[in-house]
Structures are given as C-alpha cells and as structure tokens.
Length: 166
Image: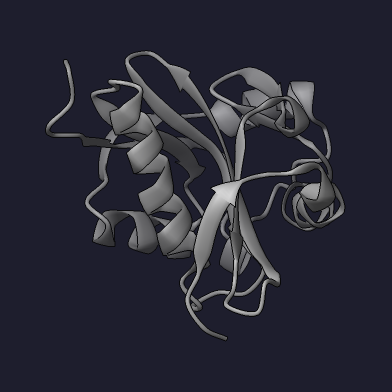
C-alpha cells in the first residue's frame, strides 16, 4: 500500500468522502453533544495511500479552546490512515494555537476507544443518555452498536497539547 499522505480535501475528493460518510454515518450528518453537524460544511483532511488511492477522512472544527475531531473514518482498518489523519489534525490544532485535541465517541465503540487511548487521548467525561437524545435529531441512529452493545452514551476524550501558544 505504501506510505499514507494527508492533505486538505480537494473538490475531486467529494465523491470518496461522501461515500465514506454514507458508510459510516448513513450520510453527511452526525449528531454529537446535542448538535447536528453537516460534515460537508466542516474542514476536512483526507488520507491517500502511496498509490494515490483514497484511504480515509477526518472532519474537524476549532472550538472550545481546541480542535474537535467531528468524524474520523478510514476505508480499511489497520493500514495507518486513522493514525496519520489524527497526527495531521494535531498539527492543525497546534498551528491554530489550540491547547487540546478532543472528540466524542459512543459507549459501544470499543475499537475507537482502544485506538484513541493508545494515541494519548483520555476519557474526561461520560454523557449518559446523550445518544438517546441524539435520536431526536437523527432517528436513524441504531439502538444497538458494535458487538450488539446497547448504544446510549457519549464519551468525551481529549489530549492536552504541548508547545502551543496557550
């Protein structure tokens, strides 16, 4: 596959990013911390492999003193796209003077919890019932998540960044 390169999304990435968001989230909208986001409206980084093939995308926003990763998905696990995208998001955060990188995942997403914690993010809050509330804004959110774990709660993870202006 070759090395992963990360760059800002370009217009020619639209179809690949849209297909990834359909696969992961059922379309371009996600609901997190009681807010509905249109991923198409957020700055997006894309990962491409050594052959130039699309390998993943990360949508983000600068808010609350940090960079929030609103969506991170790879086309296939274990190839390094997620790791490269997260590192690139950290570089964007540092360049913007943000003091933390943060995100929300759900209680069922054990593979994401493992991935993020191995990269230094820590669980700093649990928002019980947040996914239940999110279904009011996006009724297509399933009731069972990965491994048939009931899907109810959001977990906030963050990593404090060093060497920033703050």
